[in-house]
Length: 70
Image (cartoon, rainbow, N blue to C red; front, side, top):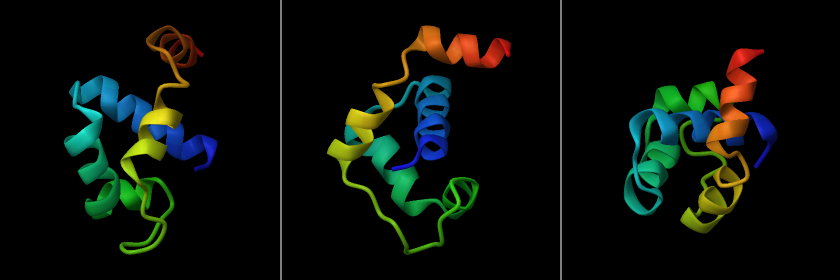
């Protein structure tokens, strides 16, 4: 998972306050517009929940706030 995808998913997780197990995994793998934003096609580069969880947790709310300020 590249840095852009991690950032997009971290912002989505924080903005929607959704859970990893169902909602964020569903958005990541099933929603076309989000997949296009991440730079993926409809069926290409599907992610497992564990990968999403491990990567998105790398970006803390404090770090996202710092990114937003810039």
